[in-house]
Image 1 (cartoon, helix red, strand yellow):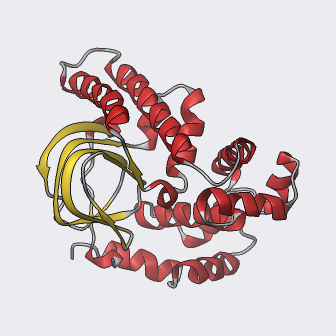
Image 2 (cartoon, one colour):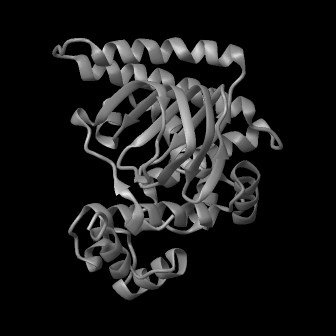
Length: 281
């Protein structure tokens, strides 16, 4: 899906919303401004997310990260949709940060989680109570309460994700989670796989191998993915000069950043920003 064809998602008051879906269609191609959790109790058709096509049926959970482009194709969905921004997530206790990092920092690896009837029956009441709280009259600590409920939902989903994982042992999973959390906190300053491997007391090769086992991509690709995602957000949603973006992401020169960006996106930073600016024109 091309950037120029995508509609930018509308701004959400307080950076959080939850709605009950009843035959929702998702017919427009949309670039997400917020993270999104879609709990599908029943559905049909297809989701296209960053060009990848997913069949939609009942008992599914979709996790979409901000910046991704999604569109429904002959899509009908019943269930719940939660949208939240980073500023709202900051209201959740720190202990939930690792869950969000594992689920959303490499969203493509967790895009679709199948659910059995028992898991759906455990998740659905959490969405029910979050929806009821969201639609209740405003009160002084309402956002904090919703953030706490979102934390519970996120931890539950992270546990589902962990239970679905196979092909690697528990120690590998723990190392992978620690790596993802470290990268989410330090990728702007530190781009070297060897640095993270040293902190985790493994070799760079071992770290890359376990990342491939857990997510299908290597450690360097995960770090680069975070850099590209942040660069795209700055190019799309800020007026910062490209030079300033390069320095914020710890590139030695704007030229080094431009070469890195073009190699990974197949467009220069200026061309990428221009394409985004022209959305809807």
